[in-house]
Each structure stands twice: as structure tokens, then as C-alpha cells.
Image 1 (cartoon, helix red, strand yellow):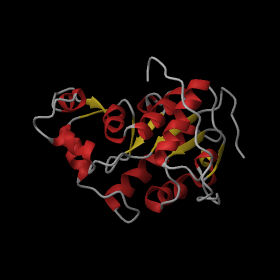
Image 2 (image 1 turned 30 degrees about the vertical axis):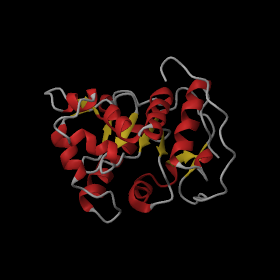
Image 3 (image 1 turned 180 degrees about the horizontal axis):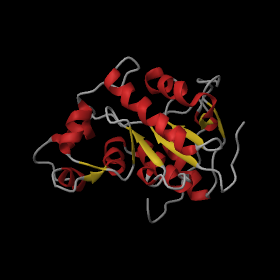
Image 4 (image 1 turned 90 degrees about the vertical axis):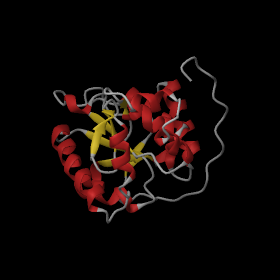
Length: 220
């Protein structure tokens, strides 16, 4: 088991993508949508992809984004990684959560299936995963904040990172909402979860007890 590493050890987080074909995703494509993020997508500056996917996915992505930004330690000199929270996209590989996108990017994302056999998804993902692996060096770690029960992106990432691809063991048995809540509670407590290698891990397990109510904070 991999616990909490020393402060000097580089670590980045990979955030699984948000679906764009749900009700909240569809709101972004409606011309009359008045949500701030939808408006920003129609400007020249665009909106941060982390904020876009947080709007689309709700609690789960909000938890992943907050956790990744709180505990990432991107390697020195890798400015393209931003905060160290890297979003898996549908056809642009890995981008920092701070990367700005416009409506045209989302339209392109929506046209690509997130599937292990979709080359336009797995090709850019593998390309950027290798860049991350090389930038992290021998001691850096990469933690997946997403489901490991499906092969859609896990197979590609394991093929690049092998046993260095980790995930929070506390995710096993939890649904998306429970994972999001768990991550936000970890941020509140300033306490990282326990990471274990994806390869060879138990991917399904008994449902753990419900989380205790979270004390509300000013930042949500």
C-alpha cells in the first residue's frame, strides 16, 4: 500500500472526464443558456475546463477537482500541468484543470466516445500519459481519481504507468456521489486518502457505510 508520500515527492492527479450528453451538459449547448459557465464558453477567453466539467458533473467532479488541487505537487518545470490536477478529455489527451476551452472544444469532445477501442480518445491519452510519466521521473506518483471498474481509460493508463498508476483504496464499493463527498471531506480535514496500485487491485467491493454529514464551509 502506498500511503502519504513525503512533501518533496512529485504527485499529479488524473481526473476522469465528465459526460456531456446528460441534462446539465446539454444546457451548455443551448444558445439561450444563462449560466455563467455557458456564457464564458461563448467568449474568446473561454472557461476553465475544470469549472466546465464541475458544472456538468456536479458533486463528483467538484470533489475530484478540489482534492487534486489541494494535494497535487506537480514536478518542477512542468508548467503545462498547472496545479497538477489533469483532466482526461475525450480527444485532447490530458490537460490541466486550468486550461481554457470554448464551445467549439466541447462540441468536439461530445463527438468522441470515451471507449477503450476509440483511437481518437486513447491515442492522445497515451501520448500525454507518457509525457507525464517522463516529467515525474523515477519517484513521482500519478493518482487516478475515477472509476477503475471500466477499461475505457484504465487500460491505456496502466499500459503507460504500469504499477505506478494509483487510486484511492477508499473508492472501492462507492458510487460517484459518495466518492465526491469523500474527497471533499478529505480536503476539509487536510488528510489524503490511501493510494494503492490500480493493477491487481480489487475493483469491486461491498458498499461502505454512508458518510457522516459534511459541515458546510463558506466555499461549499
